View 1 (cartoon, rainbow, N blue to C red):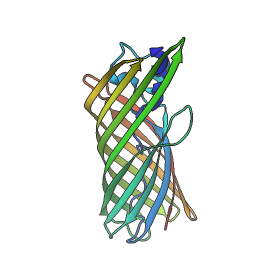
View 2: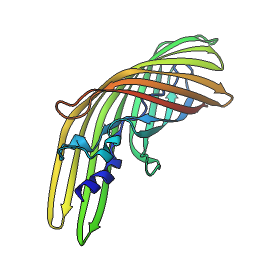
View 3: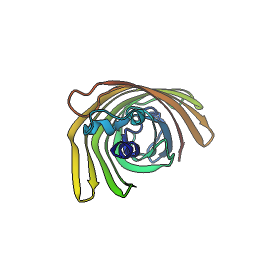
View 4: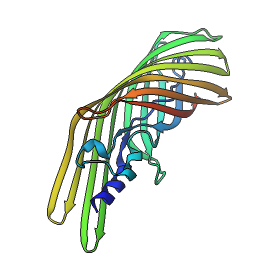
Length: 259
């Protein structure tokens, strides 16, 4: 029964969002907005094995450990001044089964324009920083042969993301973007198991999760819409002492508009 509960709880693993698709730099003018929705193959920030309350993760749950989620965000960017933009994101995640969007957190940040392109096109470079907070809680109630069990999994994470966004606008309809990035998160996870009057809890105390990589995208301006498929490669640690570093490949796509 414990194994069945753990398998069901694998769906509350917590992803990092917005790794693979980066909004182009240099396009907005003071007073303009850019709104977008992105979706990508997101990596799992914490999974069942990271709480370390079982000798091994059941084979059925191992697929949830690295990059089996689709992650999304809804972003709004406002160009406050010639070189400064503010941005906010709603973090959404889509577990594979069931495939349903679930809000899990938010981010707020800013971009500073270091190199400004000409009106005809060319290179623009911006550096960004955003603070991120995400959290998930899932309660699972099970009964079998007159025996009941409740499992409650909680994940909390806070961090900062720092991308450098370099965009070369070839013409008004096409631009390419490259973006090296760094991330630092602190995560805490705990699993509470309640059987009758007995309750036990396993806890992963606050642990750092670090990652860095390179993202790239191509933006196509199609009238009012901008479509930007992208991909990121990333080296990322897992929480807890002695956790292995993973190489991750994250494709994604963003659809946005300027107004």
